[in-house]
Each structure stands twice: as C-alpha cells, then as structure tokens.
Image (tube, rainbow, N blue to C red; front, top):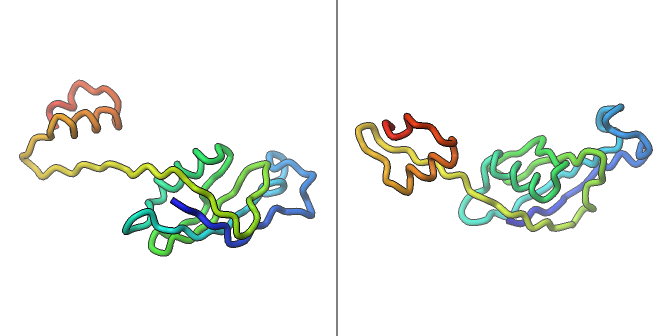
Length: 125
C-alpha cells in the first residue's frame, strides 16, 4: 500500500525540546493520503500496525477509512517531507464470522487460535 505525505509539521521552532518533557515538541506530524491496496482502504487497526512496522515510534492519530486521509505522529523524530511516498506492508485482518449452529473449519479454527492464543474451550465455538 502506498501512503503519500501531503504536508508535515516538525515543530521546527521547538526542535531542541524532547517530546517526553513537552507534549508535541520534537515530534513530527504528517498528513497523508492513501492509495488503496485493492478495492477498499484498510481499517484503522490495519493501518496503525503498518505504520508501526514502518517506524515503531509512529502513531496513527486520525484516519478516515472512507477517504484514506489521516494524520500520524512520529515521537522524537521528523515526519517525511511533503510528496514523500511510503510503501507500507499491509496485513489484512481475518475475521471469520460463522453463522449460529455451524462449526468452524480446521483452518478457520487454527487462525482463530493464533489470533486469540491457545484456549481449551475454543473447540466448543
């Protein structure tokens, strides 16, 4: 998935102050537009994980999944320059939704077990 930085605010006038002592000082803010990876934009959680994988100090602050626009903050660092295109590794969420009375397939059960952790009572779902 491609993310294009539309504008940034790196608090240049306060760049010598670490953000852990002064909120937002020394942190870079980036406003962005996504290029959809497929038919729809990712969920907030999917995009948040992709941004943290790109930079573990990156936090998704605002995001509209209908338009693909949002804002992120990079703690104690600078947001990329406007026009920068980031290639993010998007991992779609798997949400099996069985209907009442049906049993999960073995592969669905394994995915659910991985997502929730080992739970003995999962067989009863």
